[in-house]
Amino acid sequence: MRKTDPSTQLPTLRQTPFNEALRGRIKPIHCLEVARGYAYHHSRRLYLKLMDAQHGQRVRQMFTRIAPHYDLMNRLMTLGQDRSWRREVIKLAQLEEKSRVLDLGTGTGDLAMIAARGAPHIQVLAADFNLDMMKIAQQRLRRSLQSNSGVDWCACDALYLPFSPGMFDAVVSAFLLRNVGDLAKCLLEQYRVLKPGGRFVALDTTPPQRGVHTPLMNLYLFHLIPWLGKRIAGDEEAYRYLPHTTKGFLPAEQLAAKLREVGFLHVKHRKFMFGSIAIHWGVKPQGV
Image 1 (spheres, rainbow, N blue to C red):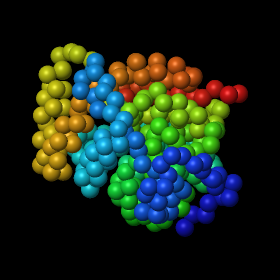
Image 2: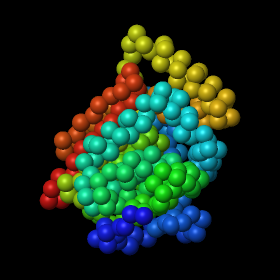
Image 3: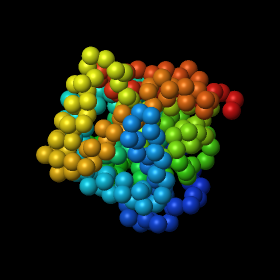
Image 4: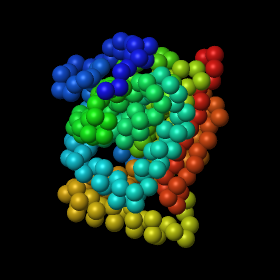
């Protein structure tokens, strides 16, 4: 079992409005919160914010339903490429010995697992608003790493992170940003909890530019993915929601501009899979 250096222990988390509702349902854990709401995008031009608790509950229920098949569906939908994209996210985070990294929207823990296997004594905090997904993540980590050493867990709202400013050397995420109800606030919260010089890295979908491949991409997004969702996960509805978030999210260039507005420097992005996937990264300036 890997020992954790005392200097990498996370400080006490600040209190936030939702940290009592689910306390005690997942361990070990630093805090427990209820997400307030996630966005649903109907098209590239329509960004519909649904911040009410009822919608947030529906979204949590959707991810709870698909949690057992989430990893398999990701592999099928990306032809197995999502693993290499996630490894690239951790590579771009430039983690060093004793780094603290927040995996926000950890899902079933892929990024947390890759990070935990990295440089020695890295302290990983895996956070998500869905407890069922994190329970699967914990089980996967136990099987893969033989212990949860170096990984802590937090169920929290991405818009109200319960962490002190300047707490992390890196904040990473995969397929989180297009689902949050207030993208600007989500980015500001990640900026806030990063140390000066800390790195932001996010993997997400992006609307592919129109071209000769557009009919094939639409067939893939709106027909093949829901069909796979119905056959594999038994939930066609959920896998109709997910393609709509892809088409309705910001183009990669606009997301890069948002990161610069927040204050990140050296912002770059790289596209994959016919322009439907992008990794964005940036650095919080020194002295802020």
